[in-house]
Length: 314
Image (cartoon, rainbow, N blue to C red):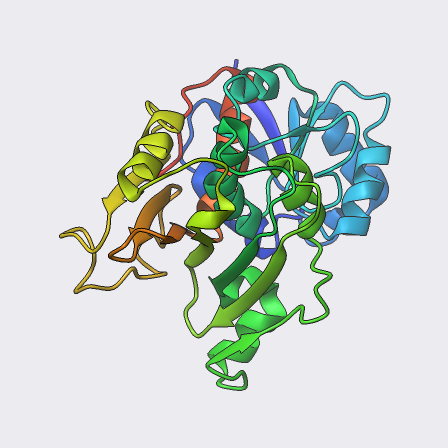
């Protein structure tokens, strides 16, 4: 018997990408409400009652309301919004973040999908905090750039109609909604300074973590940093560690934000200056892949005990 998956909010950018990844799955039955029914609370609750898992691809307030609607039902939830990423009772759905996280996701009823920027940041910073190479009191700066698809339909239309600038920074008040999950799930005492921006490309993302040697709690070099990440993500099919420095794997010497567009994986690179007293750690991913819909499908597979790579692309 196939598992029934209800996509609540299938008309949005994330929901459309989730549906696309599930469209050819013979092991699942996907339930998507039509234009009229998707706006009716009774129809949505009936869909939740019938489903094994509901994926909430909704704005934050609507996702909170949907989670309340599901109380008392047997349906399990994956919330792709930022509404529950630091909430008690929800498992944070970054399967590679901790050694036991995939098992926790598999057993959970409530899973919160990570944000796109936090996925890149946590992939870089959490192994350093966990190993004790950075202290929880570390003051971190996180510049990042995303494709415009992360801003949803309105921003997509603005870029594709030529009405948006080619690149811009935002959240200049240093209050981005991703900061709580970045701080909590990294194990930091204080939020990093997060500097997000958007470029004139649809999908892709770079997240940077620049560090001085003096910020580490122990002597380190680039090869040791690479080895730490290689060990942290060994046998993880969706996270790879590219290499150290400007090697042959760079694209004409560039670390391109769009290189993983259309995939569901994340890649880490380690750069350093000649004296190795300054380091530039980078993560790249598709903001709609490992940063959103791909992560939701990965969590779905874990929760249903299905092959983890089913429906995903590397």
